[in-house]
Image (cartoon, rainbow, N blue to C red):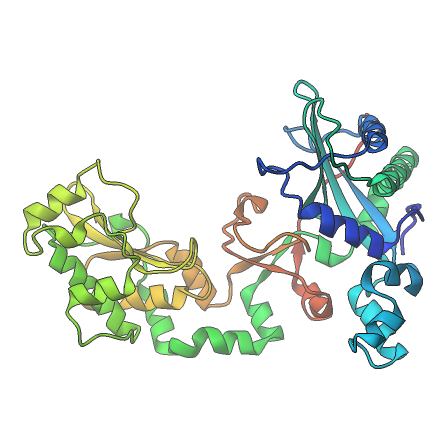
Length: 423
């Protein structure tokens, strides 16, 4: 529990409802016409007037406080999730015990925490509010009315009362201490070593090493480099067919389908496909490859994406010209594609080719279980969160699940919480 005074205006099911509905509004979409009643705009004015007392936590003027809501009674749950009678009739449940179980599964904690982040640009009249990392409110300029408006006054009244309670706690000097001592771990940011994650969930280690032997892991730790300066020699020239053959070496190491095909055909079977014309040049001419490589007018393709995937889930094999020759550069650090990248690198290295691999030291630490994994708060999608870990090399991210806290908490290293202050 917390010493912070809790608003009784809304319970968790109602807050969940507003976050869910307002979070889907897609405010920045040009077709969005989310406007509110005049009373709501008056309440928004009152909310931002209150927030004037709080110092921003960033150079962009973001104000941030933690709000709380109680779980409430099962009656408050039924208003948005269906009554017992309705769910029984729809055969979603069989008895009242299952209905209560559904309620507690949805809202397991007596008290839930919500991070409110708000920003205002008075010059343009722009305002935005995020709650639990969802964009729930926006006001742009003087626009206040339209043919269709939304009455979210009870939500705004809850926000106002909750922020007022935070300000009262800040005035007495108890707010930051209360947050520090009672904020649940799933709302915090920190790191945990991969080995501790694997100790808690050994099946994760088994899955990761399913296609990588211990001998291969040891070999990679011993020989992998990311710095081209550590290469003993470069390739004096490269042709398109050379590049395709390098790809085929990696495909074979990963036991890809189609190894009976020509290296060129293997490339076009497994690569991204947007080759920027690489497949159209003279395949055996180093001059043609050099002209294509140095042609700055070509763009928009992914010729080096040799194992296609998403933005962060593919494997690249770059040919890099460094003035005194060419070398190969493997990249693929996402957790579930990194084994392919490692095997790609090892196969090229064994073939005597000059090759480096992106983030070699991080990948070594991953194999040894020493990699830092970022823990990001509930509501933050665990991807592309590098900016949350300044000064640290963190490439993999998780949300700390409620059932995992007891296993993982002793090994978590938390970032200090940002202190909230009044003017």
